[in-house]
Image (cartoon, rainbow, N blue to C red):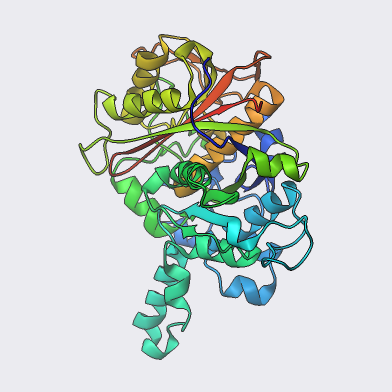
Length: 426
């Protein structure tokens, strides 16, 4: 492992999540280590005629965790974001919003030096369809006057910025299922470029919805394992038949190491590098040779100053689709070596949170490194014969002490690939 030339160093100081496995980070992590699947049958009336009737619903209803008036003005995706944001902000040790220059407590960050990057793959789906139903059934006067601000894909990011008073910059990548990971990479760049001292990053989506489920099901992307919902998401398994729709949000607080040190913050780890690439191949299928993911992997390692042998664990994108898992697995082997680093696939338990998935992958990678344990992969009975991976099975696996690294992969429709590299903080 060599020291990268990138400065300043960027560290992770706060984590927040609301997922199908738990309403906060601790509950989500405990359920992951227990190997529990969140997938269950959809029993709502709206799901009766759908070709797929299983999903991973959020463990905690976000609207009940927010002020009633506030919740009504937020799409479900933005509700998830605000819930996760509040946890991450508090976890980082901030007790109130960012301060205006020269005002407030010295312990609060300068609002002009706090940024937000929150991605969303779909945005306000519930708001779009709900207001269209009102328009069609009751006329234009019943369309909400706040429908457009609520449905925009940048709404979760904007609401996060307002919630903490962040004024440095506000970005909202909408790069499908890579959006959350791309947000983390963008936050890293923002701090390295000197544009912020603190950046809140993450992703949020709420696509357990008939339109999203019908669309993905008709593409052949979803598992239809109705007889065994808990076993439906089977990344890397020979019998996998598609992903399980999930919902929720994950948020991380990034800081320059200097800023974190000056305020005495608890540090989880360093975000050492990121690699991004494009397949330039197909809107909904990865490039079969895995060149895009392999390129992103190599870029992340190079930026972080890591050799393949330095990687102790891989948090795979691994959605449980037949083609996607195969392409990613081969890319991992091509870059790191066959069976080199243990691989976990948390979507086997959480389902696929779309634009939040990459952020949740980052969050669980941070915890894996901090706690020195790789989460299990549920439902892996027989590894696909086309893969040469060391997949962590049904029990968590200890990770070695020392200066080992963890990487997190993410991909998205359109050919987006993002890899994040984490290592212990100096």
